Length: 569
Ligand code: ATP
Ligand code: MG
Image (cartoon, rainbow, N blue to C red):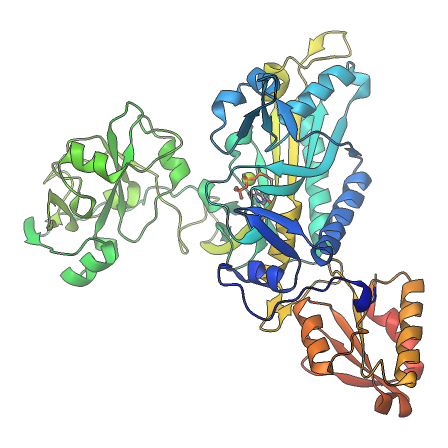
C-alpha cells in the first residue's frame, strides 16, 4: 500500500475522553471512530488488523474441524421464549418489534439460533459430532460501554457451537477447542493464560476463559505459585482459616468517629489497621428486604459468591442508600453487625477477628474491641470475599498470586440446556430420540485488537506482533519526490516485497523523515526500512525494528536476505 492511496488518519493529540492506552492509540492511529456510546466504525487501518485476527481464528477453527456458517443478528423472540431466556436475560438484550409488531432482539449470542438450525438439519447420530462457527456482529446493550472497542455495545465475536451424543464426546469436542484456542492465542503473539471460570448467563458447568495479561485488565486472575492452578478470581474459594479465634481481650466501647466514613478514614482516625475493622455492606434480599454482608476491612466482596447465599437477591444488588436509611434508620458510614436487625452473613476471615472495630449503628459512632459471641450472637459465616495474594491455593499447593487480565475468549460445556428446552433431538444408535450435549466457544475478535495494544505499546505508539500488524514493513524514502535514486530504490523494494506477498507500506508522502517515522511508530508497524540518497550512494539502507533502541546501517546487497530474515513465518 502506498501512503498516497491510503487513508492514514493519525491524530497528534490524545483524545480527552479515552481512558485507557489502547483506546487512545486506536483513535490516534486512525483505526476506529466513535458514533455513539459503544458504537464504532473501523477505518481501513483498523480493519486490516481485525482481518488478521479473523484470518488466524478462521484458519485454526477450520483446522480443528469446525464448519463456518453465518447466522442473523435479528433474532425472533419465539426462539428466546422457547429457551426461556426472553424473560431471563436482563437489559443487555436489545429488544425491538418489527413493523408487524413481532418481537425480536439483536443477538448478543447465538445459542437459540444454532439450536434451531441443528434441530432442522441434523437428525441422526451419524451426522455427529459437528461444530458450527461464525465470525459475526453481536449487540449487547452494556450498562457501561467503555474503553473503546474493549467493551462496546456492537462488537465482533467468533462463536462456535458443538453438538455431541453424550457427555464424553462433548468433553472431546471441548478439548479440541481448548487446543485450537491455544494455537490461536500463540499465533497472535500475545502473553495469555487459560483460567477456569464462571459460566454466567450462558449456562452450563465446566468453563475456561482465556485472558491476555495486562495491568489495565478488568478481571483479576489468581494463580498458584506452585501448581497449575489458575482461575478467574470470581470463582476462587477462600476457605475458613484453620486457627481458633483469639479470646476477647478488652471491653467493648463506643467511640465518636465524625467524618470517618470509609475504612481508610476509620483506620487512620482510630490508629488501627484495616484488617482490624469490619466493613458492612447492605444488599437487597430476595424477599424485598435487606441483608448485611460483613467483610474484613481489607477484603473485597465477591459478588458471585454472595449472590448464591440463601435469601440474597441473585444477581447481587447493593441496596439503594434511601432504602438503607429508611429500613435501618442509619446511613452507610456507621453500620455494623452488632444490634443490626436484618440477616447478616459474615465472611470467614471477618468471623475470625476478635477485639474488632465496626459501625455502631449510630450516626458518626463506631464500636471498638467488639467481639463475636460476647457482644452479639455467633456469626453466620460464609465465604463471600475475593481471594488476595498470599491466600492458600485451593488445590492445597502453594500460595496465590493475582494478575490482571482481559477476557478475550471463553469456552463452555453447555450440556443439554438448549437441546432440552428447544426440543432438539437426534436419533441414537438404537433409534431412540436423545438430546445432544452442546459446547459453546467464543472469542472477542474486536476485543483482541485492543488487548494486543494494551500489552504491546510504548510512549511512541502501538507495537504490533508481526502476525497482527496492519502492515508488516514500512518503507520510508527520504526525498522520494526529489531524488530519482531514492524513488527508484524505494519503488523496486516495494514491488519485490509485494511479489513476496508482504503487507508493505510505502510512505511516499512529501514529508520530513521525523514525521514519517513518528506516524509509522504510532500505527505500530513492526519493521522499518529507510532509503536516503547518502545511504544509497554508500550502498547502504537503514533498518529499525519497532522495539529496537536505534537503527542500523546494512549493505544494500543484503536487502533480499534481510527480507527473508525478518519474516520468519
Ligand atoms: P465480559 O465478562 O467481559 O462481559 P462475557 O462473559 O459477557 O464478557 P462471553 O459471553 O463469554 O462474554 O463472550 C465471549 C467473548 O466476547 C468474551 O470473552 C469477550 O472477549 C467478548 N465480549 C463480550 N462482551 C463484549 C463487549 N461488550 N465488547 C467487546 N467484546 C466483548
Ligand atoms: Mg465470559
